[in-house]
Length: 230
Image (cartoon, rainbow, N blue to C red; front, side):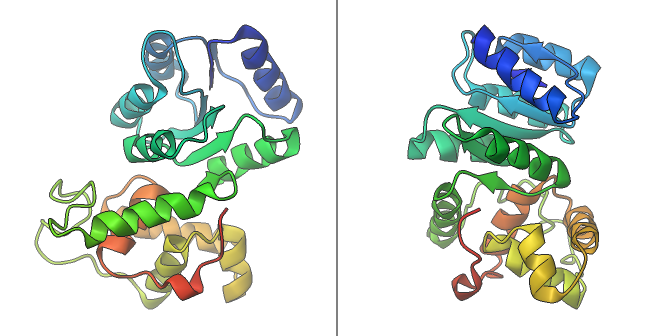
């Protein structure tokens, strides 16, 4: 589903997606319509502008996450401001791409978002990881989801991850893509995806962004292993 209030831009994005073989289930121009249509269309990926006439893209992302947690939100915005990026990610977006991106970069981002990767314009991934680390190191120990019970810390015994799941979790938290992890561990891309999905299920999390936050909160990251901005 494509959400943008500029008709020419919205139509161009939808056309690029359709020509690349994607099923564009809806194109909408405002946030209220996006939330209403998503209930019926059940999109796998939502390409979302932040600047909408009736509500912010951050509010739309939050609403989609609450009502349709399986939908992955890829923000496509003209703004590269730090606060816009962090607000979108904290609301539940799993990717953030600038509108200056070339068509091949955009289509690759949609494909990777559909596959479960977290996709950012180069440089923005490091910003997000840095913010999560800052929050995890805060005296309050509150990194956004603390205390809501979704990360498995408040509900009795800690979830038991296999050695391989923990290894992949560490790599995910450094910003490495599934492709990079598969190459590093000499595994198939599908195997890496399966391990991540199993880990998400065990930790009662919804997406890769929440997984990164969990890893940082629990001290499972090693910045020396970082794969660089994705």
